[in-house]
Image 1 (cartoon, rainbow, N blue to C red):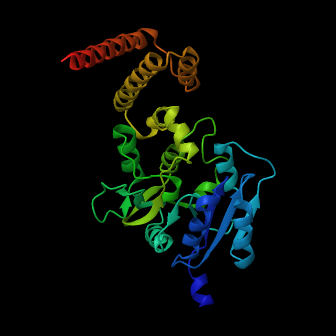
Image 2: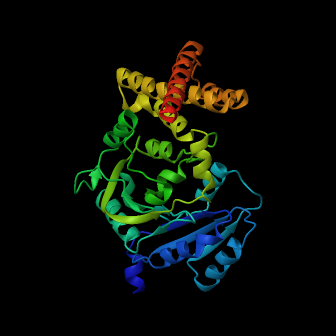
Image 3: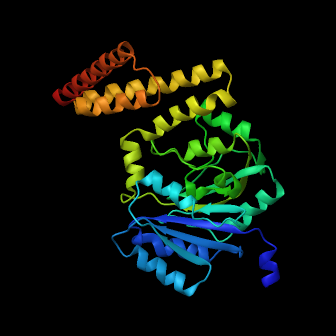
Length: 325
């Protein structure tokens, strides 16, 4: 048995944790239930104030493959995720992230590693995932275990089509992690997709046509809520286009894609200002564009603000007429 274990590539499984006690044991148990055997499990606690650390230490005491890293001080979300990547073993060939409120199906690591081993140029492997109650990340034709990095990156940059899901959905090649001081851009939320596009500059993409991971949607997921409220996903897409578009797209393709995303951004800015009437929030969202190096075009914004005011006025008249009838 020992000989069979060490014939497998070594995998670092990684779970960053902050106050995750509600679902943490389910997450850990899913790793312990993997059919794959040659792994370590690194649990990184970001100064949790609940019982997360005690849960981790309990499992680590009973399984030598599990080790706990307790941060000396609390770190902001993206900085903590980058810090967690530095805790994986230098001996690992692959890294499997699973967030504390998610879990893995038993064959997850086995199936993903198989694709990596069959296609050495692959740097990311994804698969179908159970996204709360729905199966997602579909769209690639079967079997398509191997896809060029160029093809997958272009699909995202031009059409917004992503097969990456969340960090829990993918397996990464560890050497690509180790050569980067930071995997995620810390100035933005929702930069796991840009990190994948970055990897695809020098690697290809694998996919398993089987549901291998579970992503939980719940109110306690503050990072996801903050990202949506702050339009972080749209800004991350703009960041991707500006940073990686020149590598994967022609000048005309990049210009067209940026124009589409900026149109969305101005609509959102106008809608938020009209609804919330908060200049402070508006200035914050406007400044985010400047941080990306994008010029704020006042005329384009006011055009959308006028359109939004007319739209809202028409809706109000319609409501009054329906009530009167």
